[in-house]
Image (cartoon, rainbow, N blue to C red):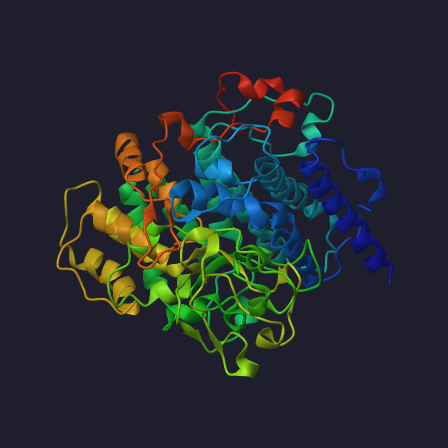
Length: 516
């Protein structure tokens, strides 16, 4: 059982990276000399077990609060009174915010773990393990490193590019790199994943879909190109993903967010959670659910509620509303199913919005085959799903024009609307696409990034006209208006103060990155 000992040591090596990143010492030297370098992996199964570490706990501090605070509160889809995150909502965030620091540290933990796999796997594999399996493992790590950098560059802009944490052990004062270089680095990582990850045909065996594929990397690369307005490349890659038929829209939008549909055929990449306790489970339900009557585990804090602006953004008959937002009288057969289902009470009022969040709320342990616990649900968090590819394809075909009636663009765009129970549009504009993206991905962390990539003044105008206020308790309720106008520099967040103290070069001008 020698390999088990080695595997535990390597996992400790990875956990070490994660822990030090969350404590801002993410460049500290790992105890490499305590790890066996020969015959480390004796089978492909051991390689797969190791890459599992890229999908779960290392994302926890990002997923738990930072992700939705940065994106949904700032983007105007959700509101809160909660003191630790309200500054994201009203654009008063500073580098001292602990939620901001937790998200930053978690992303660097993903990068450190990815770097460990990229740099040390090949020298620790038995000759009996195929090179294809090794390449796939390293390809998955390149994919996850790209995901982490894609979040970093959209949240903070210029950050350091780190390919091997050991290179900076004795000189941790690292300059940050230019945004264009970070995007090139992301593209290179994703191209490696395209070339080396296994292709897949996704179907009913959802467990087999948990790890990313070559197609996953191609889909994300299309999105990265779209963010840079490289429309031809985004169109080409998105159409290749569509033509591959690896992914497809799930028939029922509601099912996307049920635990039994984890890793469904629409899922391109996702964080994977278990109910084994705080730190390895999905804590979103604990924050989003309006009461413990829904969760059955004592949590359900209603930390955020959907803004009035988001509630009013839905078209009549849009089936996504009920899957995203709870309103009084809504019935959910999959919540408290043993009791005949759950009807939302008339007094629902998360954060004084007369509503609550439904998306990522999955119910009691009994509703999830026992796989749920306090602050530890087992439903995935989407990183990307196929509806995104379709809307990317439509926008890439539009390519900055005023409108398009291109057949392929309309097919991609309208397939998302049809799934939601809405009618087709005969032509589309960028405003149509942004509205569709907002509704399709509400509470999934995309709308804020969409606002960050369009014309800055247009984005400021959109946000400054959002109704972010509350309802009074009278009937009919009065709206207590609350609106905010961000500054241009609010679209990138401040670096955590503790990291600036450790690495003052974060405040210097970014430098070009020297690619190998």
